[in-house]
Length: 290
Image 1 (spheres, rainbow, N blue to C red):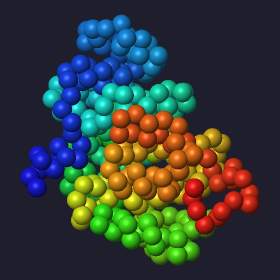
Image 2 (image 1 turned 90 degrees about the vertical axis):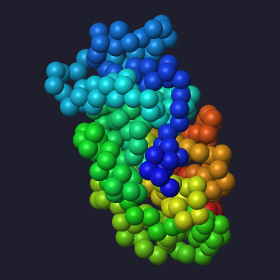
Image 3 (image 1 turned 180 degrees about the vertical axis):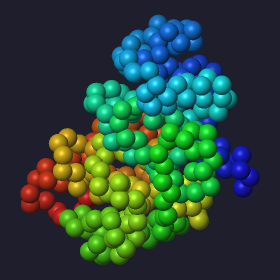
Image 4 (image 1 turned 90 degrees about the horizontal axis):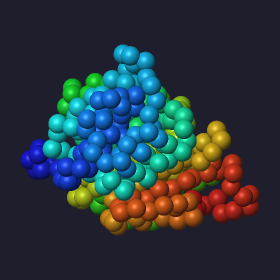
């Protein structure tokens, strides 16, 4: 597959010009004078006011927001998700009203946007392609990204789903991630930071899952469920899964993220609020996630 076709299929979706302006606007905090020259509608002004805070001059967090402004104002390439889908995650970040730990599966043309939505928090991207990581970070060195090696292929999705219950290392009562080589759905070799930090939000929009040899998102969905259930802090973990119009994403979401935890569905995005397993009722079925 040619590079430009691969990028388009993984990350890109042409949108109207007004959507580009929206992405510019929601990424700005404390740059209202500059943004005013770009904004044309009162609705966008309202959205900006709900986010705006003054940042110290030279603040690195301000820099990433200004880089996002420049990028989306001058690029014809925009994020894959729609305005309504992006708004789901943005509204959660606004409702939490604090710096968040935001883990994103996938690195692409939407990464500056996600990072600028969480300027004083930690936003970390996990990407399968090391060359693509270098390409993105060359133009956006403020982003934090790590390469992930997946042990699965999309063509194994049905077999993994039918066999994981027979592997004790995949059991919802005992499953861990770090060093868990026995459970093929567990992302066992991620950077320590991923395991040591509790993530308030997890976005699953990668890895590739549209041809048989692609890694598929099975392990990302399973691992997000394990991380959310192992949460020690207060509150739920917000998990956002994109491309739920595809069979594997939908089936694995219902198996591991659970319909009962689904709080919103917009377009091709599902939003789950997953409580830690310590909050679950005792006496339940420990052999199932849902």
